Length: 140
Image (cartoon, rainbow, N blue to C red):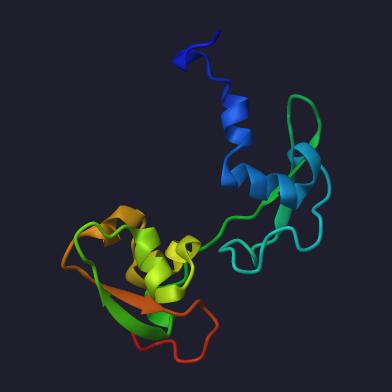
């Protein structure tokens, strides 16, 4: 029998959404060629592409997602404003305003928030914006 301290970190990582995305993008086990369309189009990483590095210890090529640069909030088109209620979480705000709880990152981008918890303060008015590339940017 195993206890809480015996959790295998590889198993935890393998079950995370980030790991699932990376494994889907890079093929089995996170190593290999990216499979086309592996990153969902609604993902914040959909347009970043992949790059390859070489593991200095094994010489194996490792394919991974490129870094995502957050667009300046002023380049995003404002779609509306939402007041945060008691008990609101950023996923609830995203579900209510964008129709997708996993799109919380769009709210973070629109409000210059690095930590999604910054947007969960009751009474705060959160800017809702469209992803970069939609017409109307510059109206922040």
